[in-house]
Amino acid sequence: MSTDPTDAVPGAVNDPAESFDRSARAYEQLVALNRAGSDRLVRALPDERFARVLDVGCGTGFATMRAVERGGVTEVVGVDPSPPMLEVFAEHLAGHPEITADLRPATADDTGVPDRWADLVICTMALHWMPDRPAAIREMARALRPGGVLAILAPGERHDRPTVDIIEDTGDPLVIRLAQSIVSNEIPVTWLTDQLRDVGLTPLDVWAETRMRVVSPDAVADRMDAVATHLWADLPAEEQADVLRRVRATFREAAGPDGLYRYQFVKTFAIARAPA
Ligand SMILES: C[S@@+](CC[C@H](N)C(=O)[O-])C[C@H]1O[C@@H](n2cnc3c(N)ncnc32)[C@H](O)[C@@H]1O
Image (cartoon, rainbow, N blue to C red):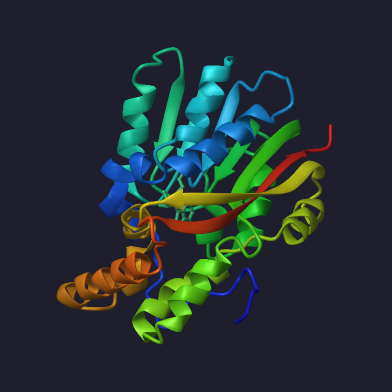
């Protein structure tokens, strides 16, 4: 199977924002482990003040909210094609009247911010859903002020390969779309480092973390329901529900004798700086 990070999933309608329109209200609970990655990314930022923050593919904005907790943020622009995700972000920001916020239903190639506007650009668990990843990174670099910082979190190389193997073993072509999506979502450290350099940024730290997770099989299936239902958007509703049931059954069958599903997850982290 190809690991080219620009591959789309064959046969799928492939508009990821549709999944997030459906899952916005439950999203933060279902991807609690993504939140932990965002926390680690924000904790790894240089010890500086970032007043203007652009969050690309912001979703419900929890990475920006970690930056807000860190202090010093006065202006936030959030860009995401899913209005229900932006609504949840607006609710989080409502508790911070000192912050000027502009949440835009748009895609990464069109953030709408002026050149050199942002002190900090954040993009967490979203780059892999963007159809033109190099263009998205170029846009993020354009938005950074001289000396500003870009922080990215994404699924890493071979991030969930044991799950890919289990899904492929089903031989079910519709369920296998999920495996194709997992593989095409990989953002390798080397690829990302090269892209950051290509847009003129200096990588300060680019690294991968591998975690072993032990969860109920339904927790994995619920996360897939939250982030990947767009893979079957071309099917009638009943057939979509049936595929999701088959995905759930696959994870349940793969659970150990204790009823828990074990899997590895690799994340790519990157922090880079614009030239002064
Ligand atoms: C897994 S969520 C991550 C949200 C948030 N950044 C986080 O860390 O939880 C992926 C987000 O990317 C958004 N997205 C999908 N395609 C996009 C695109 N082309 N440009 C910007 N955001 C996009 C989705 O709507 C969704 O909110």
